[in-house]
Image (cartoon, rainbow over all chains, first blue to last red; front, side):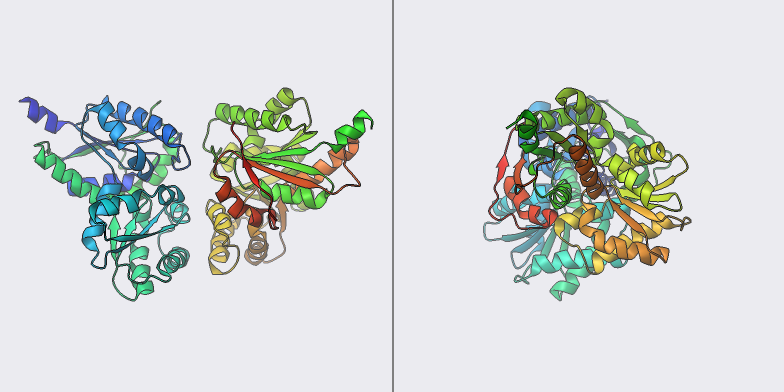
Length: 278
Length: 278
C-alpha cells in the first residue's frame, strides 16, 4: 500500500464544544459514506460561546491535538465559535487541512440568494462575533446580512421538541423579528449546529412569514460538501469501504448517548461513547 | 458610633454566575429596603452548572473574596450550583455568615406542603446534583421530592417572553411531565433564579394541571426571609436609612444592563454596571 493509499484510509476528525456537531457528522456520513469519522465533544467545557477568544483557541488546540493522535487525515471544526477564531491556529499547529462551518455556510448562502439579502439565525455569541457577515462579505461584497440570536432553539433541539405548537410558535416569532422591515431576505443560514433538528419547522415558517420560499442553508451540509471537494482534490477520499464512527466526550458520556441519536438521525446501535481527558 | 453600629451599616454581598441572582437581589430589596447591596455576576464564566465541583469552589472563592473587599457584613450566594457545593468553603474562607438559596427554598417548601409531596423545577445541573431532595430530607424525612429539569425557562426569561402563548405552552408541558402519575404534589420549588420571572405563568399552569392551587416557592424570596432573620438575630440590620445597590460583572456590562431591569423588576435609573476582573 502506497503512502497516499494509507493516508486516504485514515479517519476524519470532527469536534465541537458539545452535542451539536453531530448534525455535521450526520451530513458528512450522508455525503461521504465510506469515511471513518472520529468525533470529540468537549462536554466538560461547553458552551464555548461565552469564553474569550484566547480561551477558545486554547480549548480548540487541545481538541485538535487529541484528534490528531488518532491519525486523522483532516479536521472538521463543527463549532461555530471555534470556526470564527481558531482555524488558522489549528492549521499551523496540526499541519493538515482544517475546515470550519462558517465559510461553507456563508458561501452556500451567497450561492442560494438571488436578492443578495441573507438572514442568519445563530447563538448570541456567533451573532456578536460578526463572523457570518464578514464571511459573506468576503465572497460577495454587495450582499447584505441580517442576523438574529435565537437562543430558545438550542434547548428545543436538546429537549427533542422538534414539531408541534411550541417550536412552531417560537420559530415564527424569531423569523417575524428577523424579517421585520426586510422582506427581501431569500436565504436563511442556520448558524448553529443545533438548528438543523428544527429545519422542517424553520423552512415552513420562513415561507409563511415571507410569503414565498426561502432557501434554508445548513452550514453543516455545506461543510460536508466542501469536505468532499477537498478530499477529492487531494486524492484523500476513502472509497470502496464502509464507513465508521467513533464517539468521544470529555464529560457525562451517558447523557451524551441519550441525546446523540436525535442529532445523528439514527440509533447508536450499541456504539459506545468513550470518556476522554483533555 | 460603636463597632456594632458600623458593622450593621456595612453592605450585603450577593453573587451569582450571571444575571439570575438579580431576582434574589429584588427579593432582598423588598424584604429589607434599608440595606446596601453589592452584586457580582460572574458573566465571564457563566454557566457554572456544567463545571466540576472543584472548579465551582474555586470560582466561588474568587467571587466571595472580591465582595469581602467591599467590607460586606454577610454574603448571599444566589447561585444554586454554588449553594449546592461551596457554602462551607466560603464560610471558612470569609469568616462571616454565608447564606445560600437551596436550604431556604427547601425549608419553605416543607412548610408550604401539606401532602409532603414537593415538586422541583431547576436546571439539569441542579436537578442532577440532588441538592434539593437532600435539603428537603434534612428538614422532613417523610417528604418526597419529584424533580424535573426545565431548560427552556432560562432563555424564555432572558428573552423577556414572560406571558402569552409560548411561555404558557412551555410551562404547561413541563408541569404535565412533572405531575404525570403524581398529582399529589402541593408545593412547587422554583429551583433556578431565572424562573421567578415566569412565576405568573407557572402559578396559573400549576393550578390548571393539578386541578387545584399549588404553593409556588421562590427560593430567592425564601432566602431573603432567612437573611432578615439572621441579620435581626445578630443585631446587624441596617435601619433608618434608604438602601442602595451596586452592580458588578466580569464581562459584557452593556448586555447585562440591557436585561438587568427585567430581573430586578425596576429601571436601573442611571445605575452603572461596573466591569471587574477576577
